[in-house]
Image 1 (tube, helix red, strand yellow):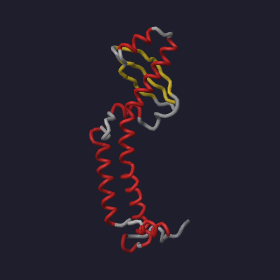
Image 2 (cartoon, rainbow, N blue to C red):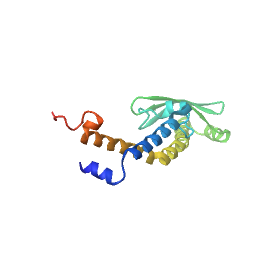
Image 3 (tube, rainbow, N blue to C red):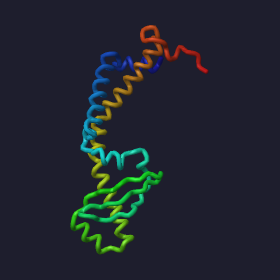
Image 4 (tube, rainbow, N blue to C red):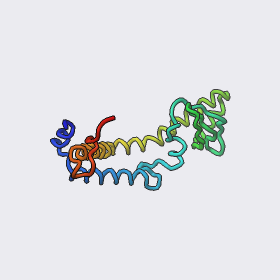
Amino acid sequence: HKTRSFLRSHGFGKTLLASARSSQKSFFDQVVRGWSFGSGVSEEFFQNFMQPGHTGKKEGQDLNIVSGRIRGRLAWEGGSYSEVNVPISRSEEAALKQLSDSQRQAKLLEHIESWMEEQFSSHKRFAEANRMKMWAAEEMEFWELCELAVNPGRHGSGLWDRPMH
Protein backbone atom coordinates (compact mmCIF):
# COMPACT_ATOMS: atom_id res chain seq x y z
CA HIS A 1 0.00 0.00 0.00
CA LYS A 2 2.97 2.33 0.50
CA THR A 3 3.91 2.06 -3.17
CA ARG A 4 0.34 2.76 -4.25
CA SER A 5 0.17 5.80 -1.96
CA PHE A 6 3.50 7.06 -3.27
CA LEU A 7 2.42 6.73 -6.89
CA ARG A 8 -0.95 8.40 -6.26
CA SER A 9 0.67 11.28 -4.37
CA HIS A 10 2.87 11.92 -7.42
CA GLY A 11 -0.05 12.18 -9.83
CA PHE A 12 -0.23 8.64 -11.17
CA GLY A 13 -3.77 7.88 -12.32
CA LYS A 14 -5.85 6.78 -15.28
CA THR A 15 -5.30 10.00 -17.26
CA LEU A 16 -1.54 9.78 -16.89
CA LEU A 17 -1.70 6.05 -17.67
CA ALA A 18 -3.42 6.77 -21.01
CA SER A 19 -0.83 9.44 -21.84
CA ALA A 20 2.08 7.15 -20.94
CA ARG A 21 0.63 4.32 -23.02
CA SER A 22 0.28 6.66 -25.98
CA SER A 23 3.91 7.76 -25.65
CA GLN A 24 5.04 4.16 -25.29
CA LYS A 25 3.09 3.13 -28.41
CA SER A 26 4.59 6.04 -30.36
CA PHE A 27 8.07 5.02 -29.21
CA PHE A 28 7.58 1.38 -30.23
CA ASP A 29 6.09 2.45 -33.56
CA GLN A 30 9.31 4.41 -34.21
CA VAL A 31 11.43 1.48 -33.09
CA VAL A 32 9.93 -1.07 -35.46
CA ARG A 33 9.02 1.12 -38.45
CA GLY A 34 10.95 -0.18 -41.43
CA TRP A 35 13.74 -1.52 -39.22
CA SER A 36 15.01 2.05 -39.02
CA PHE A 37 14.58 2.10 -35.24
CA GLY A 38 13.86 5.78 -35.64
CA SER A 39 17.60 6.22 -35.55
CA GLY A 40 19.08 4.99 -38.80
CA VAL A 41 20.09 1.49 -37.68
CA SER A 42 19.48 -0.85 -40.60
CA GLU A 43 17.94 -4.31 -40.39
CA GLU A 44 21.27 -5.77 -41.52
CA PHE A 45 23.16 -4.02 -38.72
CA PHE A 46 20.52 -5.08 -36.19
CA GLN A 47 20.70 -8.73 -37.29
CA ASN A 48 24.50 -8.87 -37.49
CA PHE A 49 25.53 -6.83 -34.45
CA MET A 50 22.64 -6.18 -32.04
CA GLN A 51 21.48 -9.66 -31.07
CA PRO A 52 21.88 -11.11 -27.55
CA GLY A 53 24.83 -13.26 -28.63
CA HIS A 54 26.75 -10.25 -29.95
CA THR A 55 28.54 -9.40 -26.72
CA GLY A 56 31.96 -9.88 -25.25
CA LYS A 57 35.26 -10.41 -26.95
CA LYS A 58 35.35 -10.54 -30.76
CA GLU A 59 37.75 -12.29 -33.07
CA GLY A 60 38.06 -11.59 -36.78
CA GLN A 61 37.94 -14.59 -39.11
CA ASP A 62 39.04 -14.48 -42.73
CA LEU A 63 38.99 -10.66 -42.81
CA ASN A 64 39.93 -9.37 -46.26
CA ILE A 65 39.50 -6.20 -48.26
CA VAL A 66 37.46 -6.67 -51.43
CA SER A 67 36.40 -3.72 -53.60
CA GLY A 68 36.77 -1.14 -50.85
CA ARG A 69 35.01 -3.25 -48.20
CA ILE A 70 36.20 -5.38 -45.31
CA ARG A 71 34.62 -8.81 -45.65
CA GLY A 72 34.74 -11.85 -43.41
CA ARG A 73 33.26 -12.89 -40.08
CA LEU A 74 33.39 -11.93 -36.43
CA ALA A 75 33.31 -14.71 -33.88
CA TRP A 76 31.77 -13.51 -30.61
CA GLU A 77 32.75 -14.76 -27.17
CA GLY A 78 29.50 -16.70 -26.66
CA GLY A 79 29.75 -18.58 -29.95
CA SER A 80 27.71 -16.32 -32.25
CA TYR A 81 28.98 -15.11 -35.61
CA SER A 82 28.45 -11.94 -37.61
CA GLU A 83 29.01 -11.48 -41.31
CA VAL A 84 31.16 -8.42 -41.98
CA ASN A 85 30.77 -6.09 -44.96
CA VAL A 86 32.24 -2.78 -43.80
CA PRO A 87 33.42 0.11 -46.00
CA ILE A 88 37.06 1.19 -45.86
CA SER A 89 38.70 4.16 -47.55
CA ARG A 90 41.41 3.73 -50.21
CA SER A 91 43.96 5.50 -48.03
CA GLU A 92 43.24 3.16 -45.10
CA GLU A 93 43.40 0.19 -47.43
CA ALA A 94 46.80 1.34 -48.80
CA ALA A 95 48.17 1.83 -45.26
CA LEU A 96 47.05 -1.67 -44.27
CA LYS A 97 48.94 -3.24 -47.18
CA GLN A 98 52.18 -2.08 -45.59
CA LEU A 99 51.57 -4.15 -42.43
CA SER A 100 52.29 -7.78 -41.63
CA ASP A 101 49.33 -10.16 -41.81
CA SER A 102 48.80 -10.30 -38.02
CA GLN A 103 49.07 -6.50 -37.73
CA ARG A 104 46.65 -6.10 -40.65
CA GLN A 105 44.10 -8.43 -39.04
CA ALA A 106 44.30 -6.49 -35.75
CA LYS A 107 43.85 -3.15 -37.58
CA LEU A 108 40.93 -4.52 -39.61
CA LEU A 109 39.24 -5.60 -36.38
CA GLU A 110 39.88 -2.12 -34.89
CA HIS A 111 38.33 -0.56 -37.99
CA ILE A 112 35.26 -2.82 -37.72
CA GLU A 113 34.84 -1.94 -34.04
CA SER A 114 35.04 1.80 -34.82
CA TRP A 115 32.50 1.38 -37.60
CA MET A 116 30.17 -0.53 -35.24
CA GLU A 117 30.43 2.22 -32.61
CA GLU A 118 29.64 4.84 -35.26
CA GLN A 119 26.61 2.87 -36.50
CA PHE A 120 25.36 2.23 -32.98
CA SER A 121 25.81 5.84 -31.78
CA SER A 122 22.64 7.06 -33.51
CA HIS A 123 20.64 4.28 -31.84
CA LYS A 124 22.11 5.22 -28.44
CA ARG A 125 21.09 8.86 -28.95
CA PHE A 126 17.58 7.76 -29.92
CA ALA A 127 17.26 5.52 -26.85
CA GLU A 128 18.62 8.24 -24.58
CA ALA A 129 16.17 10.80 -25.95
CA ASN A 130 13.25 8.42 -25.39
CA ARG A 131 14.18 6.69 -22.14
CA MET A 132 11.80 8.79 -20.03
CA LYS A 133 8.86 7.67 -22.18
CA MET A 134 9.70 4.06 -21.43
CA TRP A 135 10.28 4.73 -17.73
CA ALA A 136 6.94 6.56 -17.41
CA ALA A 137 5.08 3.77 -19.19
CA GLU A 138 6.68 1.13 -16.95
CA GLU A 139 5.78 3.10 -13.82
CA MET A 140 2.22 3.47 -15.05
CA GLU A 141 1.96 -0.28 -15.56
CA PHE A 142 3.19 -0.73 -12.00
CA TRP A 143 0.55 1.73 -10.76
CA GLU A 144 -2.07 -0.22 -12.67
CA LEU A 145 -0.97 -3.47 -10.99
CA CYS A 146 -1.18 -1.78 -7.59
CA GLU A 147 -4.71 -0.62 -8.35
CA LEU A 148 -5.66 -4.10 -9.51
CA ALA A 149 -4.29 -5.63 -6.32
CA VAL A 150 -6.00 -3.15 -3.99
CA ASN A 151 -9.33 -2.90 -5.85
CA PRO A 152 -9.95 -6.36 -7.34
CA GLY A 153 -13.70 -5.89 -7.67
CA ARG A 154 -13.27 -2.88 -9.96
CA HIS A 155 -10.62 -4.47 -12.15
CA GLY A 156 -11.28 -8.22 -11.99
CA SER A 157 -9.66 -10.68 -9.62
CA GLY A 158 -7.05 -9.22 -7.27
CA LEU A 159 -3.44 -10.26 -7.68
CA TRP A 160 -2.56 -9.92 -4.01
CA ASP A 161 -5.83 -11.32 -2.64
CA ARG A 162 -4.74 -14.86 -3.40
CA PRO A 163 -2.97 -16.98 -0.77
CA MET A 164 0.81 -17.15 -1.16
CA HIS A 165 2.24 -20.66 -1.61
